[in-house]
Length: 435
Image (cartoon, one colour):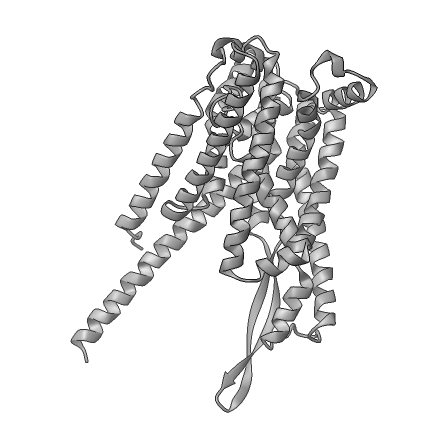
């Protein structure tokens, strides 16, 4: 069977995507003024294994260079999650969400505004945290203003770039930027890993075991993310005279309904104590409460028992919490009832809603367990083998695989659309010559 040729439109979309990624990578290497890059590199290396290193992975190394894109797209991710939760919990927001495309545009606009506010807040926190460091050449109010303006501008530009990728490129632009940031650090991570094996810091047998675990984890992620529980649904077949039978279809429910949101939100929440400390670095502000927060933040080092326990709990909690918000069983039941659809053996309305609640609970238990295992397995390995490079984090692996699967589906959809249009043209051509 011949493979379909890539159409000029798809080729242009791919080229636009590659160009946008190049722009993103160039911007992540442009440092904010007032920073001594060499001193910064030395200082950051000592903190690379902590939560700061995790955030640096998501930003594609931009945070470690304090570049224009240091905060990356994470403020927008946080704002999107907050707005999505509000649109499913507040009645006024829920009414706007149900307005269709106009409501979606309003929520999108508010999400952008919230992104700017969160970015300015985080940028000011970063400026305060960096001000006392030796690599800051011009500390003071001017440095803080410059940091807030520069980092906010960088994040807003990335938000615009992501929207352009979605519209003119292939795949979800925000997800592609996160993928590009994480993937950019992989070559260096692989080199570091091979160097550790060559120096016998990690012996060959544990190294092979780590590689086998990574391959197994990727296989599990692919399997689970594509898995669905298909609930049979019967729709009535209608004619002018009335219903004449039924048509059976399926209501697909993903095994992991929450997606990658729970680990991302859990990671962001674990960064909060560290961010809070950055506002209280002045010795005059030190006290019992500050010292308590400082000790707690110090214990949240990836690979520690405290980090593993709290991170695992947060991932499971947000898996249930987010699933409960985004999948409204009562709303789904009402939609089925209005369209005349029936789940075999279930009465429309309350009984259908209870059945969907039971099914959602079972799937969420499986999905939350899967997320916790994938996210915590690398951390458990780090506890046994401390020399493992940090880039092997479970959250990053999950994001890489999920975004790659989505990108593959987008490419397949473009190729299928291209084939369908080609078949239509051939059919019209034959019809024109065979009346």
